[in-house]
Length: 272
Image 1 (cartoon, rainbow, N blue to C red):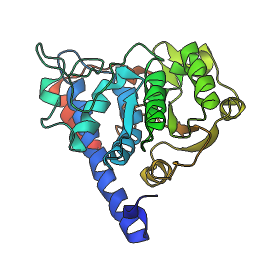
Image 2: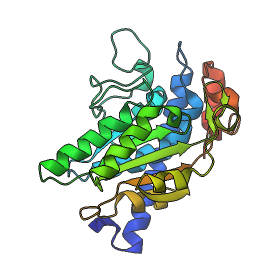
Image 3: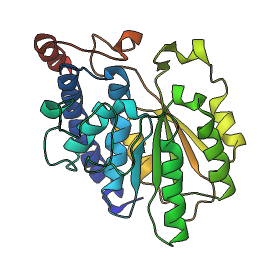
């Protein structure tokens, strides 16, 4: 665990800072939904707290890399990168505009984005490969992949899990944004994931379930010292699609949203 979290007072300060970042980021995502093209609002809001906490871990400067494998939640990533101080400019007014890097899926033209993602499943092996390269080079740092639960239908995810366990990549962390939804409906209706924690355990992972909106719990997980770990870590983070915007929380219709400026202003006022 890093020194900044050694005391309850310091831990509380960090959580307070991350909470403020998450609130700011949520408002930015709503602004992006009010762009001409709209954005994947529901999944961007569900994953925001995970991204904010993971980027705080990466800011330690030890070589930790955060890969958003569910790349369609790019609006959430751009907002999280901005409030975390990685992006030098507010991405919201530039989102989806010609000539700007803030597209519907993230790519390496965006500061803080090393790998392009969007084709589901591919970000997981990117992060595992990063973790392996750090381990081979004798360096510290984690490879953190943030995936969606619908994304787990991709076979590449499980092939990567098999390799990560076989290579004893204790510095690989796979976080599942389990909001229960995907493009065509509910994950439970399309390809259910019963016994998900048992599945990861069977692949040789350490497994933790947590509230994906609990910034204190997420920070504690990411800040654990994994330098001697022999098993990769799977974090099943239970989240709410559209989290933070009462008008769309938990609604399948929040998957992709385009709204006008008036509605955006109303939704931002409701974010607390």
